[in-house]
Image 1 (cartoon, helix red, strand yellow):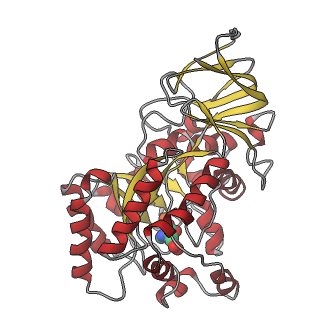
Image 2 (tube, rainbow, N blue to C red; image 1 turned 180 degrees about the vertical axis):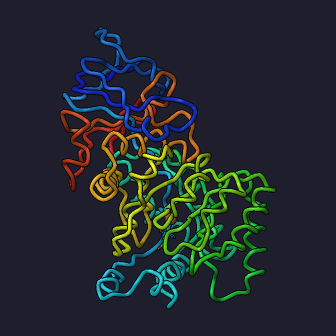
Image 3 (cartoon, rainbow, N blue to C red; image 1 turned 90 degrees about the horizontal axis):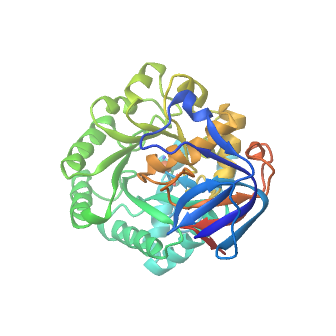
Length: 398
Ligand code: NIG
Ligand code: FE
């Protein structure tokens, strides 16, 4: 038994097998004067009983305790940077213009193809450590910067290498990111499906970037049909750059999560009831077009919203606290909703079942924040509020 003591406040969403919808997202369980008891890496109970000398103790130093963040949408595995694109965007070039002229994702693909598995691992693992330092202890990672058999396989290998390090639990998503410029579409598709078949056991989801400049609705439908037949869960990047009808695919396929949604029409909300919308306000900020997903309306309409960083070379942050700030200030989410969206709903969006809540039987992935109450999240922004991180019941020092 391990006990976390000297806690100013514990704040957690209710733990349940399904997502928290609409108004439920705003209701956290708040405890004060309680300790958290951990057994075999799981939460055993939250009580006010005092530990005696037999227990290993973790001192919260009067901080606030939350379930660790889960980041359900990341492109953590890449090589090189795109810092120079920031000036292009300031000069008025759009994300799509940069992409269609061979930059953006295509630039990162060139960098990945030039780098070895070891080099990409080293670059990417730094990001994993940054995520953990900022309170994220589980994440989804997508492939997508290889765009050919050999390089997508290299990215899958790096995701495996990261997973084996055990500081973060990982769900693996195979992403059809953009169409390569150097090969026939059908040749590309068949090499991707060959790889998917070979690595079937080690991939959790198939995702498609459905948008103008990426995959069309028809191409996405075709990929989804094949992937579903193979037994994969489905995710989608939808309605981000332009509305071309991608979110309507939720009528035809059981989409586990549906991500971005900056241009989601209100008429389509009704098709999203069985999926988790994953909103990415960091991406909105970095697109520099003043467009954010309408989180307020989605929550008020009863949807189960989640948040993620989208960590990638265009939107370069590992920090879910930053995302919570953006969600509050730019999407008008309440702090309680933003916490639920970054923990409980995020865990389910990523495909984890017993994470994101501090309830009996849940994984003891816990963060201790250097603040008197959870309401300082978002309010006190731009610095790392995480003081201690606890992974499977053990304090992690990074
Ligand atoms: O989720 N939208 C597509 N893919 C990523 C961006 C990747 C990149 O620009 O490198 C996203 O925003
Ligand atoms: Fe993405």
